[in-house]
Image (cartoon, one colour):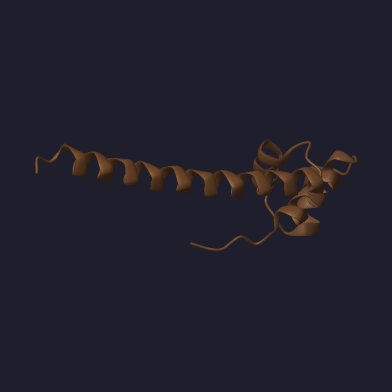
Length: 88
């Protein structure tokens, strides 16, 4: 599978060009992307600016970290329950 060709900041700049009134076809030719990509990006990143995107990435990273902490705690709790349930 190919890697990402455009970073999120570049995608937002491309979408801002479209929002400023440039035709989608013209922007696609200039940037070398398909119209479908622009519409897909518009669904995902529409209305965002770069600051909001950075905040979103920060929240996603924090969410990922918290989920791993919760998963570790769930495993620890399960292990403790198994140890306590055994008769000595």
